[in-house]
Image (cartoon, rainbow, N blue to C red; front, side, top):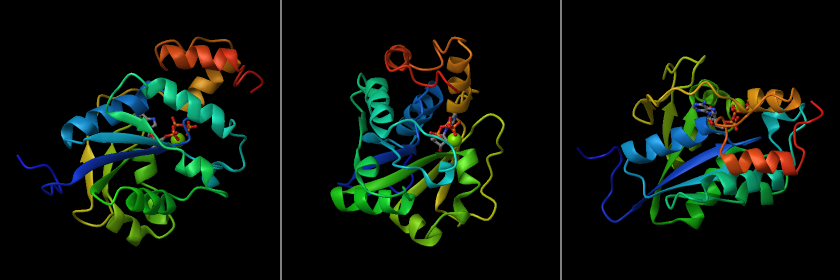
Length: 203
Ligand code: ATP
Ligand code: MG
């Protein structure tokens, strides 16, 4: 079987954007599953700068979110982390992420991995039409959100069932604030980092 969009001699680069406040096993399982199904050479995790959809809420410092993402992905040779969004001034737009990754990786085809909740909002994103010309979109299942390609351009989006993990960063932050455990919801090193930096304590 020839994977979707396979072009000889070109690298296949997955892109997993997120706030990662904190990164959790839902993110990691989704990336791992899509990497296998789409024969990706690498998945780059891209923590957002100041997230425009969440600007009303406090978000942890970018450097903490970046480091947790590095800690969580360090042991996987296929995973890497990019600073492009956190180093770009101003709010993050996915169109900028994809344009920048495109020019940094001229020999790669991009596969943007996104959860069902984000996918359903995609048509409201800035420059939706150009987005689909920069990357193939892969929508993954997420408990509590229907995975549908209603209204999305034909052939530009693949829907994938990943093992469902009912984990969200919001729930993890709430647990830490209440002194409930986040062991096994996030990687061990991330549990330690949250504790070391006293993140989410006052929420
Ligand atoms: P928050 O609760 O703060 O919104 P989150 O858990 O949704 O955090 P994000 O950083 O917002 O995490 O998500 C980044 C990407 O990962 C999004 O595309 C989101 O849909 C996807 N995602 C998050 N959690 C899961 C999960 N459990 N299963 C599948 N995809 C997920
Ligand atoms: Mg979210």
